Amino acid sequence: MKIVAAVPNSAVKDGRVIKQAKSLESRGHEVSVVGIQDADNPSYRSVVGQSILIFREDIKAKTTKWRQTIEFCVSAIAILAAIASILAGYRLLQDPSRTGQPAVPIDWSGTASHLASYWQEFVYIIAILVILALFRKPIEQTLRQLSSNIWSPFDQIQANFNMVLKVRAIRKTQAKRIIELKPDLIYCHEALSLPACADAKQALGVSLVYDAHEFYDDVTGANAELVCRFYKSIHRKLLDKVDFFVTVTPTIRDTYFEKYPDMTRASTVLWNSVPKPPVSEYDGRLHAKTNLPDDQKILLYQGGISLKRKVDQVVLAARNLPADWSVVLMGSGGQDLVTIKKIAKALNEEFEEPQILKQLSPDQLEDFKASIVRYLERNLGHENAAVEARDEREELQWQKETGSVETSPSNMYRNSAEQFDVALRKRTQKRNKFKSQGMQLKIAEEFSEAVDDIMHDADQIISFQAKIRIKDWKLAKKLALTELLQKNPEFFQIVPRVVFVPAVPQSELLDWTKGATVGVIPYPITSLNHWGCGPNKLWEYPAARVPILATPSVEIRKIIAEYGIGWTIEADPTYGNIATVISHLTDADIAQAKQSCTTFIEESNWDIHTQSWLDGIEGLGPK
Image (cartoon, rainbow, N blue to C red; front, side, top):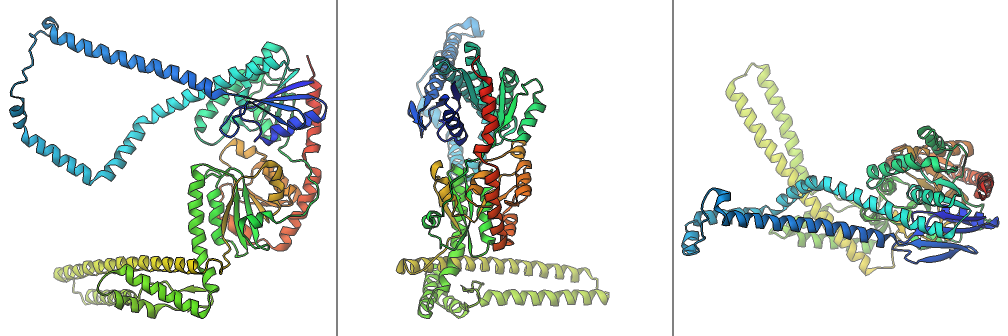
């Protein structure tokens, strides 16, 4: 049977599409896939497996052409309107009957003296410009916020416009390609390709299979409301054209049936599982790539790195994990990745210092203390710098039990604060004494309130000075630490708390994942799609004998409870929740879960799950 699948992406990065194509090919079917070009896959065609041909349509050219045409029309209308306004104004000036007044010719003589009479106005304008320059930043922020509020509706219009162009381009290009290929069966992946597949079905008179990878009517992400609205519109119009329905979990299938009672009930569930892997040992590649000791335990996150997936909470959990655990993030991301890397950098620096100080010899420790004092003297930069630096030198004490250096404010400020506390207690006692003796004179109360105000101001000054000193102190320590590392670049063994690894090819993912101790799936349950999901990681981690830590969506919770392959965290996970669960795991707990992963993959894998799916597809046959 000749089968053509359609998908609104480049196809090669979609593991489900490629696995299905290979399974159909192994059963003797001729399979082609129609996708679209993207920045990473601009090629017109490629081949996967033995003979699976992938066609990629250039929708960018189509959308760009339509966008340029519409923008040209809008610009032309604006220009014509401007010209019409100018001409209308000119005619009003030249035709007295239109204004009721005779036309007045413009006299340019004496222009300079006329302008000079407005010197006060010019002074006001210059003063306003100076004020704007002085307060440029707050004014810019206010204007930017106002601009954002003003242009927000137009951004929404533009997003709608871009979505319409994208759907239209996919529909036209993919439908044309499918009709040219003349398949016996059309297999549609995802909602955006459904209009094209429905058009091709009508033209060819063949069966149509729709594979919904998610519950598209309620997904999260950029422009989620707009995207969901388009998905709902597609489903309302076209789900009744589908002959056979496939999706990823029973929960999502039942949700579709409830939402669209008129759609076909001929269906099957094809989990996002993986083929049963051959038995092989871990080759150490993940630890080698991350420069972690071989016995370091790893909490692994793999996939798209974003704040909406709570990956930042996974990173922050590293602060509270035991010392023999590190967090590894393997994947790619956009601006969120930059933000999360900044969080990780600050956290790694926080834990770098104690590790280094524990490895210092007595002489190195003394040099380190001297460097801190030297940098502190340089940073203070005033007459009392040497005296205050000596105060700090006296305060430096090696903390053997923690391997850190004392970082509290100087004795001078601490003593001032203690004196203030003593004065406050004495003042309170005196006031109580006055009240007990009936001395409620107005002058006594006013005096007492004045003293309170003075002492409050003194307290604020003391607190402010202490904060400044702590900032100077931390900067001096950081500079001294940098100098120490530069002098001894290979001397110290530093175990990072968080490490990033780029995304790896799908064919190598299992070998990389084997290095993890626990794999985390932290997606918050913020939509019906998340509630019913069955992500690839639910099988990719156990296939590598890595137990999972996941939010309790309905299908994930069932599988964890049935097979014991991991543990659940809160529906809206926090770093404290993640760290608490991991910290309470024993080696015996992890070993038991690893063994359960082996049992789970034996009983739940791609080869088993595809049997009913293949029977359903082959039962349709050519019409």
